[in-house]
Length: 143
Image 1: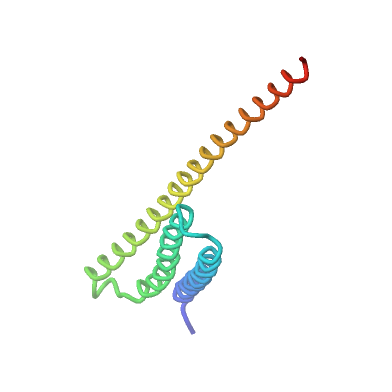
Image 2: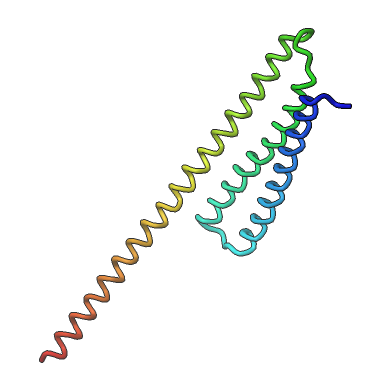
């Protein structure tokens, strides 16, 4: 029978690996749809970079799941340096995962802010055209 902490480490690892596999499959499916629908251009380039970031982050979740279980198996008393080096690498992976998440947030905000700005410019130009047409119509009917 497995000890409770051993079972907990195994469940945590299997959960993270399962989530990782599901996320990778989701990202691949999404990218295939986007690639088929979007012509080459700025949005497709943005979506490609987003896909790469998210694939890396999702894969790293699975690696961290495996690392949690392997870290549980490393005997601290007999291999303290290896134990420390291993968990420092796990912490580095968590920090990299956090950095990828923040980069994704910033890239998404920047991309959509740029799109929103372009739409606002188009809306202003369209509104100005409507107002010119309205003035021309009013000037023509008052004569």
